[in-house]
Length: 193
Image 1 (tube, rainbow, N blue to C red):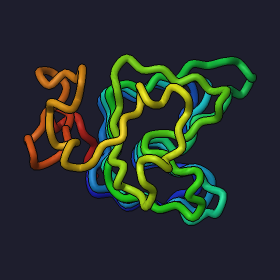
Image 2: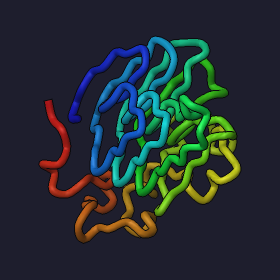
Image 3: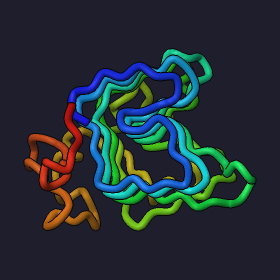
């Protein structure tokens, strides 16, 4: 998605809600997302029942004006399964950047919010711009395994290929070193309106 303006109750720059789904090689660029309640994320607002997000990113300005809303740079909220099964969610080689604000600053996360009973795994680290909200990196809520999966960064670090450990810059990603964060290659893989 390139330069979209979206106003939503439960949504994101690409998908509102996703259940038992895969999102791969998808990017949201320069989107303005205004959430008016519940869950808002740069890529998707709400997921459950097992999801895979691989080689994807969001560069979005996200505003959640709901006092109890969840905001994530990539995913607003990952929920426990509808049938209480222990679904495993995978978030691999993703990043989130842009600007974010949330009336409830306790439930903002650079990549994704999720409760302690939700299991999130990764086959490659994800990065988020810790300066994208008014929170410092030390105040961004984390789960016990977040440190190895979701890595706080800053915009200068996110514009250097060497900082993306294990990412494929031969076949999947491209970067204008020092000028912008990675994009998928070829650029035609991104959605435009």
